[in-house]
Picture (cartoon, rainbow, N blue to C red):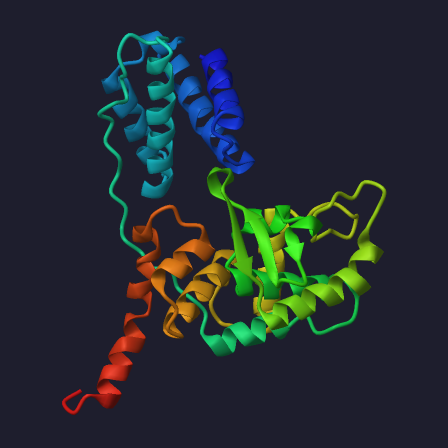
Length: 295
């Protein structure tokens, strides 16, 4: 089964252009299934049946996996066997009717504008790393970047004169996003005064570099956001994706068109972006109470 998994991952990388993180996650899911199946003397994709796949997902639930994780595994199995069916590696697709777990609908929780202002201002020192961190937080909030996008964005992607940045997101799709005045100022200051001090012989063209001159990793950005949220006295546990949620929610609250927000976030479907109309429902109720004669 390992050879088929390797072929599938090569297809995801070369023909679909999917991100490294997605490839790693999919590989982990498929190899976990392959190991489990081998324990039941199923050593080939041709021996996999629909009941076997369902049994595997049930065992994952018993193992303590969340519904979200189980859904990711089910999706990985679906696309894997769809790939194998298209290439005649299996006579029929055993995962075609594999049910996906229903997930509880959770709305993204944005930071308030005052908390967001405290967070981006928290790296207040003049060391190269603090200057970098200020520029990083400003850009995450100003452009609604995903963590992986912030890690991979390069010097040539930033148009300082035009005030826009080119980002390559999911599915290898490229989009242009305006960079706000404060974020642009922070970036220019970092690129002039701090990044040159972080560059090493092994440095690439990524904008944000570590203390050793390598591109920042998603794990490091997580640590930085948590650190600065803590010193900003923000009570809730903040994660980097909340800056993306805050970007979208604050734009919507300011009157931005949902289609424009969709374009800047890089959502393939407007339905994904529409969740932010629900996030801002609390503000709508507040306005109604304040201004309606019977509110």
